[in-house]
Length: 263
Image 1 (spheres, helix red, strand yellow):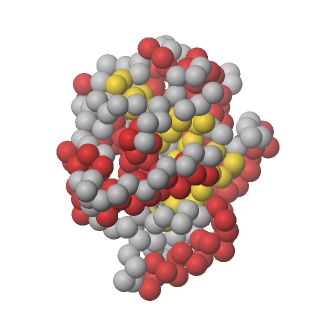
Image 2: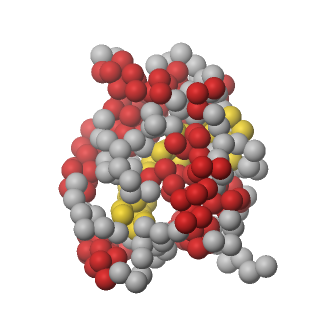
């Protein structure tokens, strides 16, 4: 079975979708069969991989409402080894519609059972909230990556997220683990970034990835072109940092990938 990894933090603007797009693309780059599921009604992961979200016919919304099976709405991204389950604005209604349904927290988990061994990794791009869409993702996942922006209030709200993880473990998904904490928008020239690294390391200890994602113009530009950064500007610091993160992620999961030599 695939390893299912949720990318979650209820704070917005911390790099969840950027990480979802680029980690999934880099996993595919290294030959790992990967599926990215857009669980956010803003559907930025969908558009960031070149899909026109207003023209997408079938989305994760239909899967959660059991109107379609997930294997029938997979979309090839044009990147070898990477597929997408898209989202659009319809997903806004899912939170409300799921409330009165039986086993509402396990809809995604049950849907993913139908995929069997199609993928090695399934990444879930969670919305910036701790509502039913995020709870569905955490219930389905084996682990969670927590992106943390290097800013003054980096740890603000993490207590709430950790409490949610605890509740999900106790009531819905005892296997859920922290895959890693990822520092994003890092600027080594600024003392604050180093201070945040120290604080996050105290909080998460060995779970913190050594790779830090820098502030990078090419990384910010890539979604506007509907491409992951490794296709938009592979030699940029942003691309190289996500390739490094992916090697570190794979190493933690028992797969050694040699660092690529510069061309």
